[in-house]
Amino acid sequence: MVEMPEEVVAALADPEALKVVATISSAGVPNAVIVATVYPLDPKTIIFSDLRLGKTKENLFQTRKFTVTVLKQNLESYQIRATFSRFEERGNITDMIAERVFERTRIQPRGVVYGAVEEVYSASLSNPGTRLV
Amino acid sequence: MAKLPEEVIETLESDEKRCMLATVNEDGSLNLVHIGSIRAIGDEKLAYACCFDGKTTRNLEEGRKRVAIAIWKPRLEGFQVKGAFQEMYDSGELFDEFSSRVNSEMEMMGHNFKVRSVAVIKVTEVYALTIPIAGERMA
Image (cartoon, rainbow over the protein chains, first blue to last red):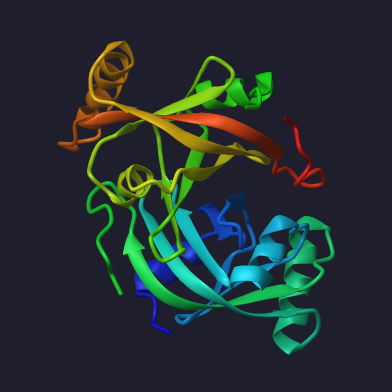
């Protein structure tokens, strides 16, 4: 588990930034979906809500690997590779996140995915592929 | 092979869209990057410009051909195209077409990158990513 640099945490917390989550099935088939609820719980932990996660959730339980790429409006971009640590339906943080997400989307999340950050890369055109952590 | 629905092709033609391409790394982890130049070639293939020798190109050339592309249409729509890498072109009509467009865009953005090759992806599945129909297969 590693700590994301400040600029990456800020990008993930930016509500205007596009966030995509990629997962992989046990058969090796990638899946990539837009997940607006991705959020940095702390510099080592990424979370996102289950609003209608189908294949993504199935893949997380099968292979536990996922990658989040965030793209800010100014095209600054970061790639965060993570390991799925748990799916929580209830709990202090999960309930608080669910409440916030419901206020924004009017959809009740089914739970929250927690992931441990393993590697962080720049995905901006100024230094594509550079490992940051 | 699947056909891209008209609304996906239209979205890919828009300057406002954003696309992220996922490929599979050697260790089974995912590489996921923003690709600005993706567009439809007919209704069964996608193509994009490769401007540097990055992880995406290496993954495809090393034989891990499965890809997934998330397409965001501002502000609340999205699609996912799944496919398989078919071929890389470093010359010819498609290469020249992408080079003339993408090289000038890169220059305008102040980057020195030039198109090295053009990757062609065969479309195998298309899904909606828009709530409440996220996950529904479109093709």
